[in-house]
Structures are given as C-alpha cells and as structure tokens.
Amino acid sequence: MLASLKGVSQVILIENAWTGFIIVIALATVHVKLGVIALLSAIIGTLVGYLGGADKSAVHQGLFGFNAVLTGLGLSVFLTANLATILGAAALGTLCTAAFMHLFKRTNIPVLTFPYTVVTWLFLLASYHLNALRLDPGLIPQDLAHWHMNTAGEIDLASGLLNGIDQVYFQTGFLSGILILLGIFWASWRLGLLAVMGTAIAWPTAYLMGAEITNLNLGIFGYNAVLTMMAVSSVFHTRERPALLVGLLAAVSTVPVTAGLNTWFQAYGMPTLTLPFVIVTWIFLGARQVLPKL
Image 1: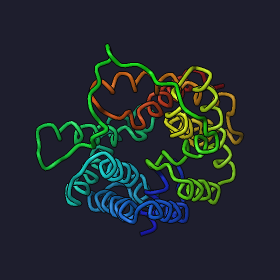
Image 2 (image 1 turned 135 degrees about the vertical axis):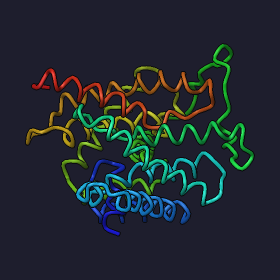
Image 3 (image 1 turned 30 degrees about the vertical axis):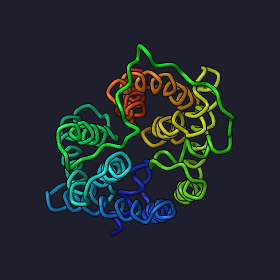
Image 4 (image 1 turned 180 degrees about the vertical axis):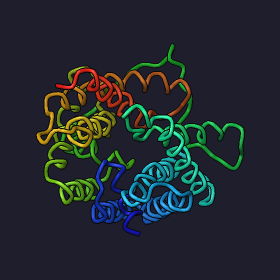
C-alpha cells in the first residue's frame, strides 16, 4: 500500500506515502469516485510492476504507479466508461511506462508522464469508433479557420494560481488545491516553494502574452509549469542547490508550448494533458547533458 500511495505522489514528482494519502483525500473531497479511482489505479500499476518482475526499488518508489493514476483520472474526467475499462487502461499505462523505460534507458532521460498521455489519447480517440466509450461533450474538434479567441472575463488571480497546482490532478477546487499544496509541502518545503514559483511565473507570463482569461482562471497554463519547475530545478538536478533560473526559464517556456499544442490538438478535440511538461523537461534535461552548467 505504501508503494501505491507513493505512486499517487509521484504524479507530482514526489516519493512520499503521506503526500499520496493527502492527495487521495484531496481528490475525494471533489468526488469520492476520483479518490477511489486514483488509489485503485495506483494499486494496479504497482501490482503490474511487482508481478511483472520489475526492479523492486523502482516499484517501492511508486514509479510504476503514477502513469496509471493519471490514466485512470484522465479517462474518468474526459470519458464515460465502466470501471473495468478505466482500470484496464491504467494497467496499460503501466505497461507503456515499462516499455518507454526500456527505450529510454540509455539516454539518462526519464519517461515522465509521456506513457499516460499516449494511452489517454488513444482511448479518447477510440470513443469515435467504440460505443462503449463516450467522450466528454466539451471535447469536440474545432475548425481553426473559424475559431476566435475570447479574452473577455474577470480575472480571478487567487483561483488561477491555486488551480495551476490543482490541475496536475485535473481539479479546480479550492479545498483540493490547498490539500494538494499541503501534501507537497509535507514532503519538502523546497518542492512546495518550487511548485508555487511555477504557477506564479506561468500566470503573468500567459497573461502578458494575451491568454484567454477563462484559461488563466482555470490554471490551464499553470500545471505544466509547476511540474517543469520542480523537475528541472530540483528533482532531476544533481546539484544540492536548486537551479532556480534555469527552472524559471523552463517554466516560462511551457506557456507558449502549451498554447501551441492546445491549438494543434483542439482541431482533434483532444486535451493537451501534460505533453508541454514532457517536451520542455526533455529539452532542458537533454541540453544539460551537453551543457552541464545549466
């Protein structure tokens, strides 16, 4: 169970069972179903890793659980399907995690959440040809030639900043956001500050670049920046002191990358998910192997 809870916390790049427990509670405050699916998905991912003979240390760290958790939560949010389908997809997310670990093992680049994005997109797209899967009505392909931005609306800075953290787990509630942030600080005050810095730099960057107010308030431009800030500055940084300036640059970079990918995927009616975080973090971690002072 501890490894499964770590699988929940590893979504936000933290190995801490108590943080995972707090986040499960945070999800349950929004809907009990979300908390249950997150925990069950983590258990399934951990079992697949354990029964499949994966390195026990990696299993105990929760590294086979977090993509399963995200897959389960993502399909619960964007798709109407039975529990067996969702948990089966979570198991597939773990298999993809193992496959990408093998493909990436000589690169010194982590797979991050890429396996979950692939599996989630495939299941969402499958809904067009499988009646058992019903796509969220809000996810409809849009004709870019006739699409126009709507920058109207009232700014809600506090919600926008908190949702930038909350959206890591697909949420936008005040209580869930506070609990998730509490869980991060419980594990590490340093990672907590980096998470706050990530959402705090992404919001004004997106605002100054002319982002839609609705997306700012929902934290759409924040969660990828939060993950990237934590990953580049600390989690995958080998030095004792965080690489704050590089992390801030990486976090800022996620804003135009998110906007660009949103444009690309809205033509297919698909969410961008955490692909901006994956791309930007890969770029900076890859560059660091050639430019070690970054």
